[in-house]
Length: 67
Length: 192
Image 1 (tube, each protein chain N blue to C red):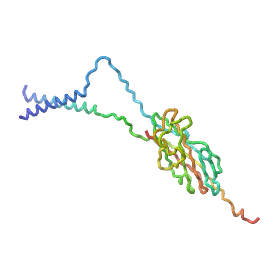
Image 2 (cartoon, one colour):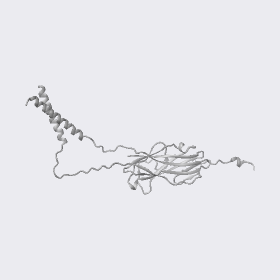
Image 3 (tube, chains in turn cyan, green):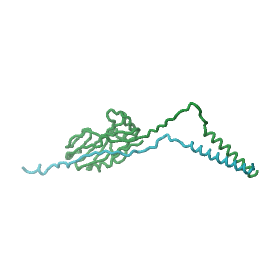
Image 4 (spheres, chains in turn red, orange):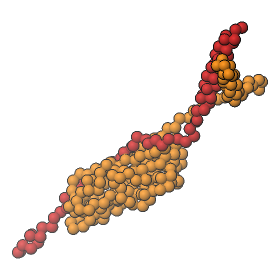
């Protein structure tokens, strides 16, 4: 086999192996998160109600009027 | 050194290094004593719900010259209306512990009106749910609740059946110059 052909085959093999190694390494290098990310729920609501009537005003004029 | 030799040596070096990394990633082929893997993913379901979502203090008037003090535990000082007994009930209906915060959509001035109104909340475990709410609780006794979000169960609000319910009582001071139909929304925010 010609030396040039041998070198080409060598380069091809080197490239294939390099790509394989990089791929395997990157696949296994993914870290699995063990901590949950804080998430807020959709808020839930409730209602407080009250109806305030006007306070009765003392009729001081009536109290002070002459009998 | 000729360039062809350099390329050759470089290629060999790349092959050796690549084989090393591939070797560390591949761990061999197991034979015999096969084991199966069952993969179960349990999704987190986080949800809270007001099982009692309405608290009505009814109708009444403030005694002239006085400040009415009402709470949902039966106090109705200087108030012509009936005493109110009840509370909001909040349940964690998910499958994960939460932290809980409370906030209103109105300030006491906007909700009650009149002169120097106050509006307060108190958060406690529902009867039979001891430990439902743990950690920082601004509302462990009656405390002002307003449009600023505040912590009610700072460590967790539990989800397990025996500790997944809390009750929220309310108290308010109303001056004699306040009047009208009033409502305020209490919002519970859960975080997990």
